[in-house]
Amino acid sequence: MERVYQMTSGDIECKVDGSWHPSLEALHKHLRKIKMTQEVYYTQYRPQRDLCTAELIPFKAPAARYLKIEFAHKDNLKWWLAKKPEEGKKWSINWLAKRKAEKALVYPPLQVELRSLMCPSILYYDHIGGYAEICHQLGYTIRFSNEVPAARPLDCPVIVDTREQRELTLKVPTIEATVKCGDYALPPERDQGVYIERKSLSDFVGTLSDRETRYGDSNLLRFTRELQRVQELGAYMILLVEIDLKRALDFQQEPTMKHGKVGPEHIFKNLRDLFFQFPCFQALFVASRDEAAAAVPTLLSMGEAVRTFDLQWAYEKGKLPL
Image 1 (cartoon, rainbow, N blue to C red):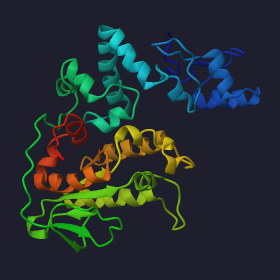
Image 2: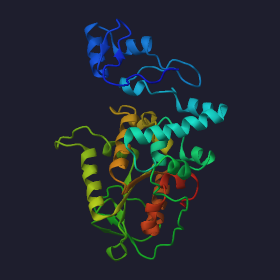
Image 3: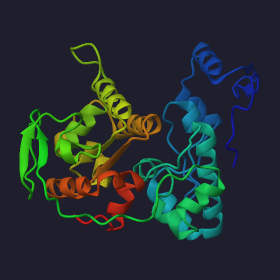
Image 4: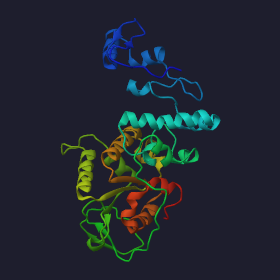
């Protein structure tokens, strides 16, 4: 199955009339002139078919992304990996190699990133040879360990920022005060530079939205500035979201989110971009508000050690005691 479309300047042929164009943008301009939509063109002349089912994958802009799609649904990918283990192993390792080259990645993608893309999760890579080992062989810089430090009982209160509007009910003493970054931290004398920003699902989507607000910038831009401050301080930020990652990845199915104007694909792309920009930042999605409340003292008690492992991976493996 042909998967590569644009190779170099001047390589793109219009399959309708045989004309040649220097870029996808130029081809699309030509399609407008001959009154053909991109959807009609690509589904008729450059159709992408699911490697698992051979079904036609519906066209969705941008075209450059459509031409790389190999599975219509993640369930199809999972079934194909199980059906063709050797071919699937090669495909999965090659996916990581291509991702590194295309995005100029230094560090391996986080578990949250992998689960938001059409690729296997860390748990699959661990099964076929070890995620860290595979990524090391591909030239990634490994920053995380498979070791998760033990959480210690806190012998000090947790500081809750005065601006926190829906404060979690923690099972440890709390004090209201101004937190340098985020919503939860340890007192100054115990501060190890770890800060937790709590979000409900709607808060999370709103924070990662790049639509302009009435104040002239976007929530995403404001959050980016906060992460810049975290980075300048040499600190570490954990975005703690009180909903399961699977539900968050399909948040338009949630009753309170059905009428939103932005979809999960766009929100999680923005999140991945922040991961790339700020190595001082991770996100952790937990099953409920109660688990989020349990996570706050657990994560803060680990101090700087939270920088050393993938939080979402540890949570899904049951290595993060909540």
